[in-house]
Amino acid sequence: MEEKGNERWSAAIANLSEISNNLHSLQNLLNTKAVFVDEETFNKASLTSDQARTIKVLEQRVETLERELDAAISAAARARTEKRQAEAGQKAAELRAQEITKELENTTKVFELHMEELRAKQDEISKRDNEIKLLEAIIQTLGGKES
Image (cartoon, rainbow, N blue to C red; front, top):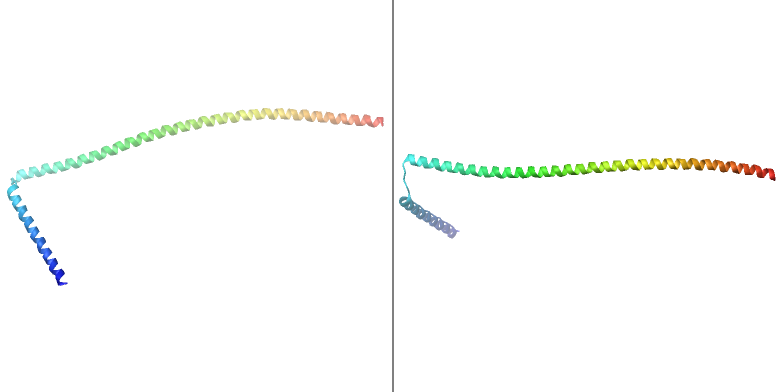
């Protein structure tokens, strides 16, 4: 247990030593490479930097809006195409409905003609049936007189 505690302290001391070395290196770098400017120049540079960031954000927003506009234009084109297809489908359905209606009307007329013909034949059959019955009655009457 005590051994693990010593290892942790040793690791912590090593980390602090490394941080100290890094800070020393950073301080040396700043002393040799740093540029010191007056407050007005710093403020102008800050303003320029802020404007550059703002411009970048606005450029990204413009790109996003352009993509959204392209997508909206594409969607509108698809909708127009779908509308034209739907209108063509509706027109075809209306024409088919007209054809079917005309065919139904023609079939109805043909059916009516057949019904008239059938009634005429039925009337003729009924008339002939009555004639046959009359002739049968006459034959029976004549046959009855002979016997």
